[in-house]
Length: 418
Image 1 (cartoon, helix red, strand yellow):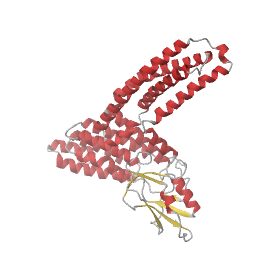
Image 2 (cartoon, one colour):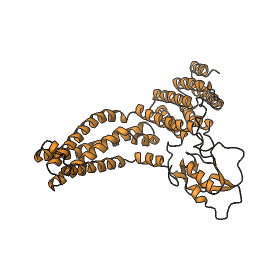
Image 3 (cartoon, one colour):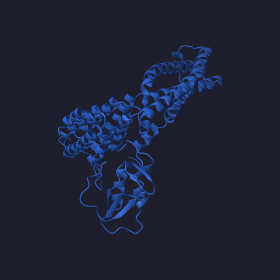
Image 4 (cartoon, one colour):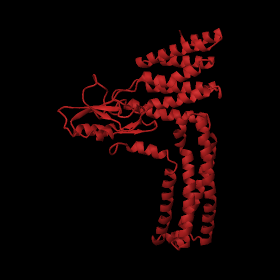
């Protein structure tokens, strides 16, 4: 963690969602490589390097400059088409997951960097920046760049063909959700301690922004509490929507607090913005997966197989999340901050309510939903078992109302075990 408010990891994740970040980074690297090649001229290594005709270098750089701009433009068009397709077939909330696609960003960044490299190298060549040794070095770098472009292009074409498909979108949502669930297993209270006792009297830390909590920097909140000899209880977990002047946390002090205590520094440890993000919000992953399933179940799409795939994904994620935790696995380094655990019942509401409602009239979805919930009801975790049984009963009631054939109702009831 670093500084008040946003953590380094949070900022890195936001930069990964910006299409300009990697091309800019790669372009800076290509410029550094060009000027590093000029250092070879004065290093004495020239006696060991073969002679390269300047015309050969100019030809290679001209080819790179002419072709890379076209390929980079083509890459942008293909990426936008794939992103649009993924958003339309999945859910708008999955757009940032697709935007983070490492292969597409790597390809686009490589093509832009190769174009920048060839243009600047050609200019420095014409200005006499290189001597004989530098010609070979820049030629070797250009050949390496050319080989990299070919390899990345071939690999990227295979990836971009699948980028807009629904299956890879579900897989990306699963990976993102699994990462945050694994983090939640290690830090179920975001590095703080569990809530103990009723809510104490104290001062309210409120939000001046209307939006969703994206991240809580518990480490900085702990340091603020140490400085003021206070304790903090978080009331708004990541993913919570905040109305104007909503209470995000409650602080209380061992001694009467000074009249001018700075609560704005504590409020700055909460990152609030318009949209939810995956970073510390396990429920958001299940919201995205559920929305994908609900869109697949709509009459315009009528794709129950996708909903069943989503259900299987959810069961896999939830089963991994609630496995017994080894002793010493949970990290609670910041003991002045109390943080509530993620509510299993609310997570199940996010995951299964919409699928149970929209899939009530499809016997295959109803049967698979009941089997999925029955598997989760066998969990050793009492909260998960109770939530699974509740949603099983709710989904069965909906299926009994929506299905018109008695045998279909009987199949769903048999799968539920009720």
